[in-house]
Length: 214
Image (cartoon, rainbow, N blue to C red; front, side, top):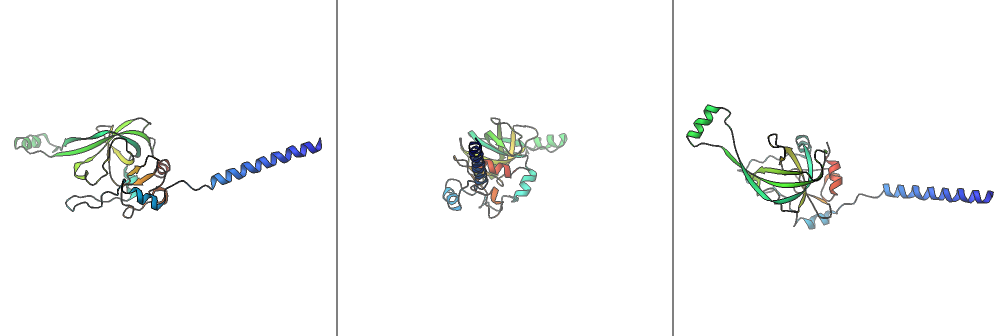
């Protein structure tokens, strides 16, 4: 009887040791990510944007800390449908001046483009999975920002339009493509806008969102 008890205790202790070893091994597993060589190979499909902006376009480069401070959230979403455009007329702020401008045919009208996204998740928990939003920017930047198409997945910093809650404005800094396998590839130049290793190209999208939380 005593021998049986000793054997049982021995088996239990062995089982505990195996469990502990497995847990330690799991904790020590490096995070799955792409190598620099793999990222370089994907650059044909996921290019760095904004590198050749003409001097006539004012495009101040923000660093990642500034982007995180200014943005409402980073949205991980899938592009739905095609690009669309809309126009916004700038107000002079005074009715009399507006009427005078109109009488002379003067109007400041700005053209914007936008994409529709189906939200998968976001860094600040602002949206629910399946929510539909749009991300917009002035058309002067259209040739210098990533060209998106239906089905593409991205992570993008957004600021909500106060007059139209479903519309958000976005910038290139802090924007990532997401591959079908779930890897994030920066759309911006990481040599100009340095980021931490956990926010660099090649990390998993879900891990990146955690890193981008405020």
